[in-house]
Image 1 (tube, rainbow, N blue to C red):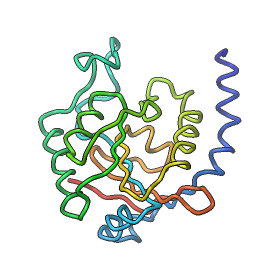
Image 2 (tube, rainbow, N blue to C red; image 1 turned 180 degrees about the vertical axis):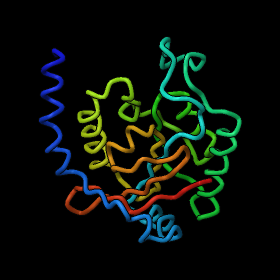
Image 3 (cartoon, one colour; image 1 turned 120 degrees about the vertical axis):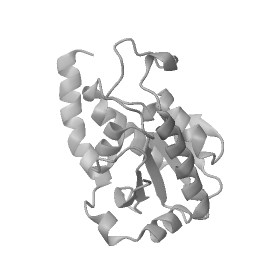
Image 4 (cartoon, one colour; image 1 turned 45 degrees about the vertical axis):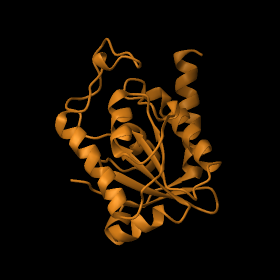
Length: 197
């Protein structure tokens, strides 16, 4: 596919995405944190988590998905933060969750350190920071995956700022949770955010 065709495809996908997503910008101010934790336990909601603290922006030029030594990784503070986030889940009654992660090491490590159960890589959660032309198609693919997902068990998606912002309109801090509701009509809305620091 040529660069021009990709660009045109991305433009055409934008109206389609607007059919899927409804963003409520001030939902976090209107919804209590305790009700957000409860929502995760009762279906129709899921959590998008930006990976924990990993100093820097993007990745080095020699980045390789399977080689953590070529990537921007969690700092020690980030590793502690990820463990504390897992503790927050447990303190709010969530001992186990279905945890899916980007293949980037900082996301995989965050997901593992949560200690909420088996972690599964989901390539649709991979960053498109260097390839923004993938934003529309990647977000639509994630929406399709979520539309078919059983949400009766808590679901946590560990991913990147760009992915979360494309999906929700929220620009999360490292380690911040965005709680999303899957509406009966198939759209998604932001129920609120939970800061973990």
